[in-house]
Image (cartoon, rainbow, N blue to C red; front, side):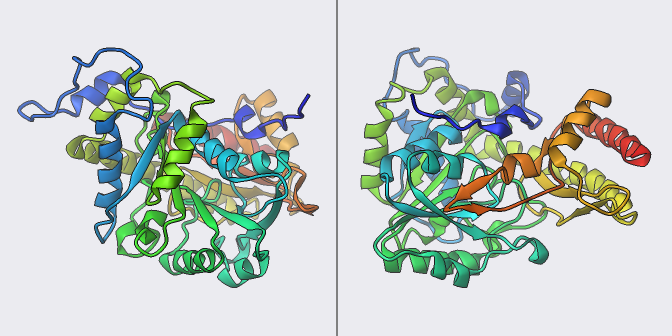
Length: 393
């Protein structure tokens, strides 16, 4: 029997404020030509994903880039988690070596580790806004063995972007060594007052014209506020990559729900997606302002520390006890949910839990992952309760 490492983050999950069907359909304003096509038969449909949905995903990426990127190919999956798993399972073999941005979503290192793949960590610097150093990346590459570089942008849990200059160096290093780049970009639409097209952090697909072994995964779950649709994708300029993903996909699912795909196709209409993302941006801005005021208050008292996120739906916040030492985050979160009913993700436990790869350990003691893209009233009440708890500790 294979040992499956517990996916601890799912046990401490958070969620965004999702759209209802009524809210989604209401975005199709009276007098426009956009509507949901309900005439499509509820059959298996295209095994590789409905053609119109694939076209809309490709068009969405093209619309986000400063230069029109052509010759893109996409496979439809059940959420980003399925997309990432397919990529990692399809292109890696025991004995291979990969480099993983760290900290990051547990799946991106736990799945390869379970399959006997060597892992090196490209560590973000918490003392420099969680930045990544391309020179460190060069030192991690093992000639002839490194098969993939895995990044998570915008980063979960820190809410940090990867600037264009660093992405350019990453692509150059990968191209020189024929390494696949996997970019989990599920949080990419959630920018807080930063225009990604001006150069802060475009999609990895922006480099499709100069290197073809690049992969972007994403879904409608985060910025699009439609997590229940379970629509994700694998996108690449390399058709062979997508063909191999579709072959591997046959072993996991016959097809993704046709109803979900129809709804996703509707949501990705240009005018509808613009309204969805505008709604998400407003929620992010309003809630992040609340969280910022709260953190800065307790930061001045020596109890909390953070690097304010500029992208994504989460913040990575370190908590200190009354003596100035980082708390045991797992025990702290367990105590809070037991004592006051407040659920917060323990960052050290879920993102720095034990050995990561090649004997490396990285401790995020005292860190909490705060998801803030929920109903404003819910966040307000949660911060009030947490503030009272901090005041008593």
